[in-house]
Image (cartoon, rainbow, N blue to C red):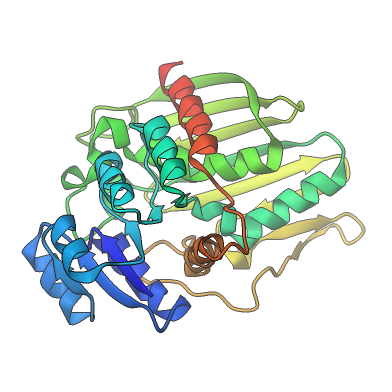
Length: 325
């Protein structure tokens, strides 16, 4: 199998590295407009081109991964679908072209696969299973924050997509975490929002949101999202009469409360997990590999995708409600 990676920045290189472990026999080729990135990719064994058309003509790949800035995805996906390629795309953050792209994928008879990495975290799936088995009312409190300049310490935050209001850092956090929250707790009925700008960051959107979500099944959630927290934080609690779970974003911190022992009991969801030291400790590489495995399972007809453009469109509409509240 030959795989094309469009966009050879940090995420494109990550996908390439994980692809080598998931599909050791796969041949990798890539596209990037930046010469330095192409040279770096070549050093990693990825044959690199400066255009999609050039890569398609030379390589005839079997599928493609889109790892560019979200605002560019729609045009790139459209070109790849025209070539009849199954497409794996990173978070889009905007719904540009969603209806046309899903229609074209159906017409071409190829999968259009959308990343939603938190759905592949063993901790979120454990939380979902526990809540659904509990079958009693619950509430949750969730704070996700990280200082925006620390996201890509190797480049200025104004020079990549989180500096753009349409694809800003807070919006990305919502797009990362709302899918698993909706998967675990169901659709949202009501939204109440407070938002501010606390920092001196040179961004034209609020850097702090407090959101109350009322799900259709009665669950209430308080969601605090920011890009100003000096320490990267992901603190989650869900509680009801007889259930109390805790999670601080990495596999070592998932716990349940044991009422008899009156103490937290660790919950192990991974026998082992991989972490890239360049990123916060709440980013686990296993989930990125698991969704790539799911993509190839969709290609060979043995699996169904966990996420879709249709589901993502509903999440992006919810984010719009939050931003416009």
